Length: 342
Image 1: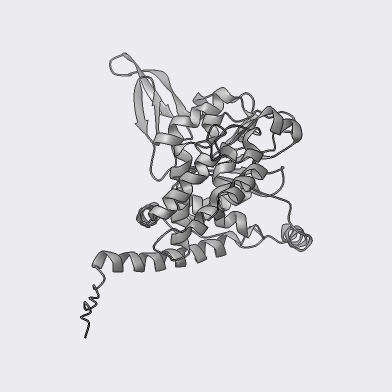
Image 2: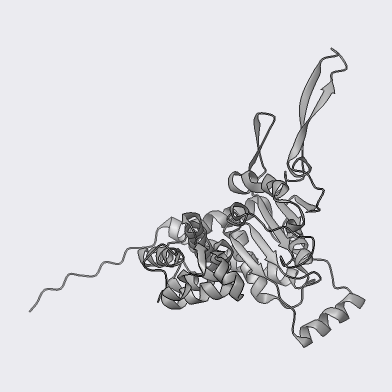
């Protein structure tokens, strides 16, 4: 009789049990947040799902859509469901960098008469910043957010000032074709984990929105505080990313670069630059968040493919040929996804 090695079942560790319970708590928190958001927002479920992925992955989000679709209201409503310090900046052509980060002011001590510089913090010193119509201010002012979004700190007057944690920027942007807008620099776009496209609602949803304006619903209530949010974000970072998922992310990144042999021939002349390693890190983090919100302990290739367009499309730089033909970055990403099989 052939000997068979006995199967040994390893009991789950306390850490594994804790994470399983934490995933259940995250699912409950997500349901409560969605319920509170829908007190003000009708429809837009896909956008809300992506917004929560971005939030729990610890990233920044860029909302793109024409005025009047509820982009600002959605971010304000999200802030209301979180017991976080919230600030809003209305970006205008005359906005200066110091209006965002703060500045050094000269003050005189009453006792000694000495003059000293004191840093006055700007509105960026918050947990959740709404950068409203970010592309209505010139790139010089937009760049004031670069260090804050990457490092969660601000440098001024030769000193570095840490921002309160958690720190998130959710920006709204009107389509670039609209008058009075400036294109966001590539370095700025790369700081946003996800680009969320907000479109027009269907007829039934639009009728419900119009009806709600006559009789507003109840105000949303807080669901999470800063400590709880950071605890869930730490849980998301512990979600497993198997090697096969990493390889698929790398394949998508390399296929987006026109100088790589894996770039599809059909899109090579339409691309000037592709996505970089930071994009891969953020795609992996977003996949972890999507898995966690779904109650799963590991990210999958399906998570990556579901998030590839909102995470990568705004990082692609189209060539003149693509712009002249009217080929969008979204269409290019769909071609890349078709070429890189799961």
